[in-house]
Image 1 (tube, rainbow, N blue to C red):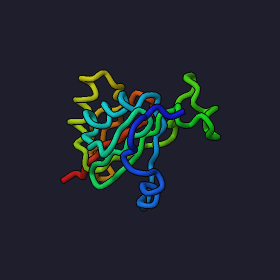
Image 2 (cartoon, rainbow, N blue to C red; image 1 turned 90 degrees about the horizontal axis):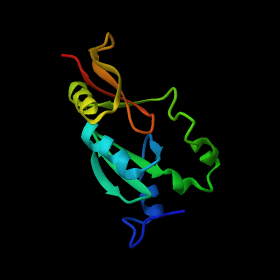
Image 3 (cartoon, rainbow, N blue to C red; image 1 turned 30 degrees about the vertical axis):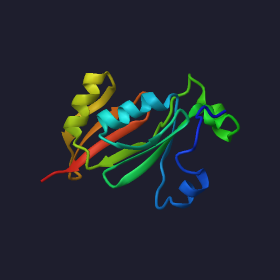
Image 4 (tube, one colour; image 1 turned 120 degrees about the horizontal axis):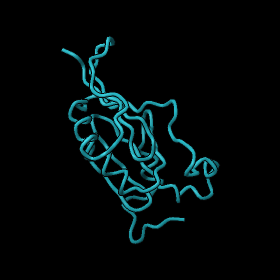
Length: 144
Protein backbone atom coordinates (compact mmCIF):
# COMPACT_ATOMS: atom_id res chain seq x y z
CA UNK A 1 0.00 0.00 0.00
CA UNK A 2 1.44 3.34 -1.01
CA UNK A 3 1.22 6.33 1.31
CA UNK A 4 2.41 9.13 -1.01
CA UNK A 5 -0.30 11.46 -2.25
CA UNK A 6 -0.36 14.16 -4.89
CA UNK A 7 1.46 14.40 -8.18
CA UNK A 8 4.35 11.92 -8.49
CA UNK A 9 7.88 13.27 -8.63
CA UNK A 10 8.40 11.36 -11.85
CA UNK A 11 6.42 8.52 -13.43
CA UNK A 12 7.95 5.23 -12.27
CA UNK A 13 8.40 3.90 -15.84
CA UNK A 14 10.29 7.06 -16.81
CA UNK A 15 12.61 6.75 -13.80
CA UNK A 16 13.13 3.03 -14.43
CA UNK A 17 14.06 3.54 -18.09
CA UNK A 18 16.75 6.02 -17.07
CA UNK A 19 18.62 3.69 -14.71
CA UNK A 20 22.00 2.32 -15.86
CA UNK A 21 24.82 0.18 -14.50
CA UNK A 22 24.63 -1.44 -11.07
CA UNK A 23 21.47 -0.61 -9.15
CA UNK A 24 21.08 -0.69 -5.40
CA UNK A 25 17.62 -0.68 -3.83
CA UNK A 26 17.32 -0.90 -0.05
CA UNK A 27 14.11 -1.89 1.68
CA UNK A 28 13.71 0.28 4.77
CA UNK A 29 11.26 0.39 7.64
CA UNK A 30 10.87 4.19 7.44
CA UNK A 31 12.09 6.33 4.53
CA UNK A 32 12.46 9.50 6.65
CA UNK A 33 14.55 7.72 9.29
CA UNK A 34 16.69 6.10 6.59
CA UNK A 35 17.32 9.46 4.93
CA UNK A 36 18.77 10.86 8.16
CA UNK A 37 21.55 8.24 7.95
CA UNK A 38 21.99 8.71 4.20
CA UNK A 39 22.37 12.50 4.45
CA UNK A 40 24.10 13.02 7.79
CA UNK A 41 26.41 10.01 7.98
CA UNK A 42 27.04 9.25 4.31
CA UNK A 43 26.81 12.82 3.02
CA UNK A 44 24.39 11.81 0.26
CA UNK A 45 22.08 14.19 -1.58
CA UNK A 46 18.34 13.52 -1.66
CA UNK A 47 17.09 13.61 -5.24
CA UNK A 48 13.51 12.81 -4.19
CA UNK A 49 11.69 11.48 -1.15
CA UNK A 50 8.14 10.69 -0.12
CA UNK A 51 6.75 8.21 2.44
CA UNK A 52 7.14 5.32 -0.05
CA UNK A 53 10.37 5.94 -1.93
CA UNK A 54 13.56 7.97 -2.03
CA UNK A 55 16.28 8.40 -4.61
CA UNK A 56 19.66 9.52 -3.28
CA UNK A 57 23.04 10.15 -4.82
CA UNK A 58 26.59 10.80 -3.83
CA UNK A 59 30.13 10.21 -4.95
CA UNK A 60 29.15 9.35 -8.51
CA UNK A 61 26.48 6.80 -7.52
CA UNK A 62 22.71 6.83 -7.18
CA UNK A 63 20.64 4.39 -5.14
CA UNK A 64 17.04 3.92 -4.00
CA UNK A 65 15.14 3.33 -0.77
CA UNK A 66 11.71 1.69 -0.78
CA UNK A 67 9.55 1.53 2.35
CA UNK A 68 8.62 -1.98 3.48
CA UNK A 69 4.93 -1.24 3.02
CA UNK A 70 5.44 -0.80 -0.74
CA UNK A 71 6.41 -4.47 -0.96
CA UNK A 72 3.05 -5.81 0.26
CA UNK A 73 2.62 -7.96 -2.88
CA UNK A 74 6.32 -8.65 -3.49
CA UNK A 75 7.97 -12.08 -3.06
CA UNK A 76 10.34 -10.56 -0.45
CA UNK A 77 7.48 -9.52 1.85
CA UNK A 78 8.02 -12.55 4.10
CA UNK A 79 11.66 -11.53 4.57
CA UNK A 80 10.74 -8.17 6.09
CA UNK A 81 9.80 -9.48 9.52
CA UNK A 82 11.10 -7.30 12.36
CA UNK A 83 13.00 -10.27 13.80
CA UNK A 84 15.07 -10.91 10.69
CA UNK A 85 18.39 -9.18 10.07
CA UNK A 86 18.81 -7.39 6.75
CA UNK A 87 21.75 -7.11 4.45
CA UNK A 88 23.78 -9.94 6.00
CA UNK A 89 26.86 -10.59 3.91
CA UNK A 90 26.55 -7.45 1.79
CA UNK A 91 28.84 -4.47 2.10
CA UNK A 92 27.57 -1.23 0.61
CA UNK A 93 30.79 0.55 -0.26
CA UNK A 94 30.69 4.30 -0.80
CA UNK A 95 33.96 5.42 -2.34
CA UNK A 96 34.77 9.08 -1.78
CA UNK A 97 33.07 9.55 1.61
CA UNK A 98 35.60 10.42 4.32
CA UNK A 99 35.40 7.46 6.73
CA UNK A 100 36.60 9.50 9.71
CA UNK A 101 33.84 12.08 9.22
CA UNK A 102 31.23 9.36 8.63
CA UNK A 103 32.35 7.51 11.76
CA UNK A 104 32.26 10.65 13.93
CA UNK A 105 28.77 11.56 12.74
CA UNK A 106 27.52 7.99 13.15
CA UNK A 107 28.77 7.90 16.74
CA UNK A 108 27.19 11.31 17.50
CA UNK A 109 23.85 10.12 16.15
CA UNK A 110 23.94 6.75 17.91
CA UNK A 111 24.46 4.42 14.95
CA UNK A 112 26.51 1.26 15.44
CA UNK A 113 30.13 1.54 14.33
CA UNK A 114 31.24 -2.01 13.67
CA UNK A 115 34.84 -0.90 12.99
CA UNK A 116 36.22 2.62 13.13
CA UNK A 117 38.24 4.23 10.36
CA UNK A 118 41.45 2.35 9.62
CA UNK A 119 44.05 2.26 6.84
CA UNK A 120 43.65 -1.06 5.06
CA UNK A 121 46.33 -3.01 3.17
CA UNK A 122 44.31 -2.78 -0.05
CA UNK A 123 45.01 0.97 -0.27
CA UNK A 124 41.89 2.43 1.30
CA UNK A 125 40.96 4.06 4.60
CA UNK A 126 37.58 2.63 5.61
CA UNK A 127 35.02 2.49 8.40
CA UNK A 128 32.23 -0.07 8.90
CA UNK A 129 28.93 1.46 10.00
CA UNK A 130 25.51 -0.19 10.42
CA UNK A 131 22.43 1.89 9.63
CA UNK A 132 19.03 1.80 11.35
CA UNK A 133 17.84 -1.06 9.12
CA UNK A 134 20.92 -3.25 9.65
CA UNK A 135 22.72 -2.52 6.37
CA UNK A 136 26.50 -2.37 6.52
CA UNK A 137 27.96 0.75 4.88
CA UNK A 138 31.69 1.10 4.19
CA UNK A 139 32.69 4.67 3.39
CA UNK A 140 36.24 4.84 2.10
CA UNK A 141 38.90 6.99 0.48
CA UNK A 142 42.17 6.05 -1.19
CA UNK A 143 45.33 6.25 0.90
CA UNK A 144 47.94 8.72 -0.34
